[in-house]
Image 1 (cartoon, rainbow, N blue to C red):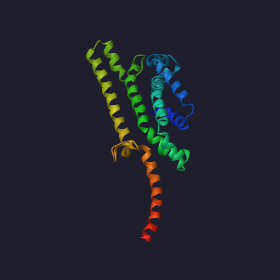
Image 2: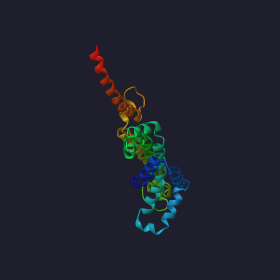
Image 3: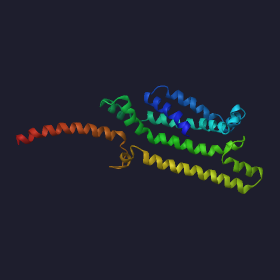
Image 4: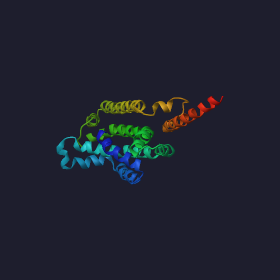
Length: 222
């Protein structure tokens, strides 16, 4: 997952920020979803990579995890409220500031959804690595099939399911506590304010200064 994120996130976030070439990158990455994971594992296990231990399995899982991470991160960037983004640019923010302080926080929930989906799928799919001779929890299941031991097969399946649910739960907590917009999404009126509240607050501060300046002459006249 770490390797997949290191590959997919920079590409998706940068293309989402630019708004160019992202659709092509997403479509190319989604081609990987059409390739059966078991077939890819089998093909990689027939290459010289099989001499390097679990390398074929790791490559297959990385390729399998990239599409959901890349797709969700790109869509999250593109679905950031354009009015808020343009307001940030109008306030004089540079491209980097808009990316870090506006677009990325707004895209964070969908970005984490992609990571969570990829992580759970990777855990569940890793069991297939045992079929072409790889390692992992799948060995428990395949050994159970070979021994015609139903209890062992069920135990292995339950273990994989429990691990997938654990990963899902942990990433949900991480997404909640690491969300830079968490307080704004749940605070105040209870409605999602996103970056618009920040932009409005900044604008309000400037206008507030003008009001204060006008109040002094009024007080003097009184």
